[in-house]
Picture 1: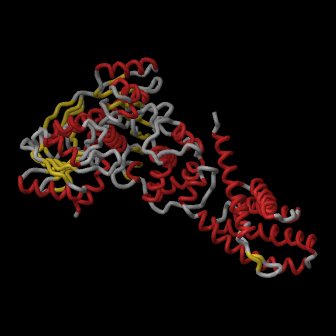
Picture 2: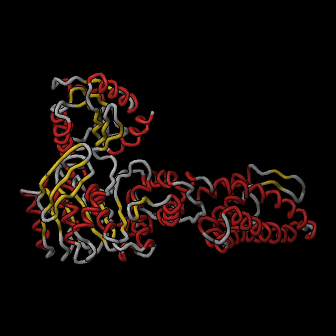
Picture 3: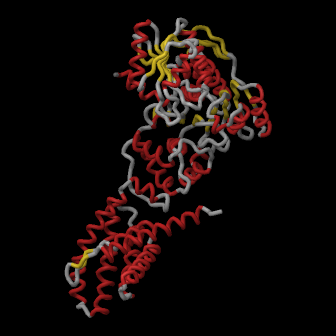
Length: 603
């Protein structure tokens, strides 16, 4: 089996061979003489490029091999002093580039190239020419100095263009670590980089994120955390618990995903999204590390590492960490011993990653449980609960369940509940499911009280009251009422439908799109019970179910249905139907739709 080191060495060898071939073509076949002393050739650019990328030793080897093979290829006599000059060009360019780390990339390239030519091309090679061809040394040096001043400037420009290319740098870093001084200017640039580095949505496992975190000093070890997993509700629970802790006078970091509009949303300090300047600074630190790895991290892994680094830098008292998918092999699961683990509930989702049965999914979610750490378990029963209980028993982790709740009043403005011994808690987040999520957040806060005595019934009430969490049964506009809910799996659709029946007993206009790997026929059965009219759209995903195919599912259930070619067209149709039928419109689907929906609503 080939090791990573062996694989990397083969890639370097192949790259050097290719560069040598290019250098020989440039030097022996595409060069032309201007005078007896001046010759325009870019043969040395591949040697300098190799020295910069691979260091002085391989740069010297490259120069030597390129000259020797080039001479043999065209029948030139080998001049050992000329060969020495070629070797010195690779060695000097690599050495100067390595020693000039404090300078900007263009300056480093310029001084590396020109110093290599001054010593290798002008001095050493001129000596070789004067010794073997009886040329006058001072005149040779003078002419070659002028020659390589011109050639060197051309090579510097070409190398700057090459080493500023993001596409080329991405390929280079698959071969060898190459430190660059490029800085992200916006969070969108950082997000695009993160999306493209590995080329895949998810790669379960902890090795990549551990490599990133180790390289920046293992910040996760100094962060006290609450770790939350579950199929649904973990984001809302995280938001409410973070708000409670903040109202209790603590400095709180929160990490959630996916973000709705901007990557900055995923990392929050005391409820405020991290600034674009701070996020890009975090990615500036992580980028050279990620680029140098053999197994590239995913977007989520980079964002997770950025979150832990941010929380350490900000000196938070506690961080609330939401798992991305599963728990056992989720990137967030590098916490050694959290203050509390939470499992909000378990249902079928991401089955290709987590398993096809509830027990298999429960096994993955149970990875959030740590030795001796209390675990709060929500809506889990049957065999799946047995899996979690077995894991907790194995790790001597005490299990708790959330306090029961009583709904005292419910309107489109919010819900008032009693939760255990805490009465009159006002939940501003809409949806019956948020009552359950509030009970998880309240119960979590109570379990954390012995760590943070400042948590009281009053701070719990204030925290729930002041929670802001977008994209979850959120009213986006009035006249007509338009609601967005990120219900993207079967359990999410069930919860949304129960809330629709509570708030809108006469039904709604429903805009929806789904991924083909979801239980979309069962989801359509549920939507059909609350929708008077359905508009289907195709989500922006390679896994999307085409809107016309989803429409046929609703037609077979006797539901009036239309299709829309885009989210904007779907919004327009939904609003037209809502006005004509005097009904609210509800968009149900992935949180990734939220940005497009917001933009369409504004128009």
